[in-house]
Length: 179
Image (cartoon, rainbow, N blue to C red):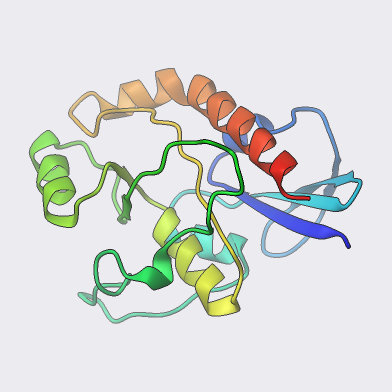
């Protein structure tokens, strides 16, 4: 049995950090992807762009909400719980997603406390929602690039390649646990 693993990266630096130099590029809609063939596994890496809409399109699923609706359901809704850890040993975290690049420490702290979250991003909720709608297992591997404060933009740029490689190595190890 061949498992198909879809990796969705917002930025090229993130996608390129996963198994660099391996695979071949396939022109696909709405985004091109790199495909790596392995025994019992086919890994597809899509670079979709920033934000939840691009992330959902990268995973080939999207749901629409009216402005002001809470798009993820109730906080900690089990429908948005990642697949069980297949043995990677990576730490687990609660992640909240939004439509903005957060640069306010007070807002970041308030969101983290209110929603019991350890990380903030712009894509995971859309991927989780699309995967759930399609009945697919999912997980997210995140490497922190900034502290969601007034230095976030410069920290993000300075830390992107390091964080992307750290996440890429963790995803490579996780893919090996999926037979």
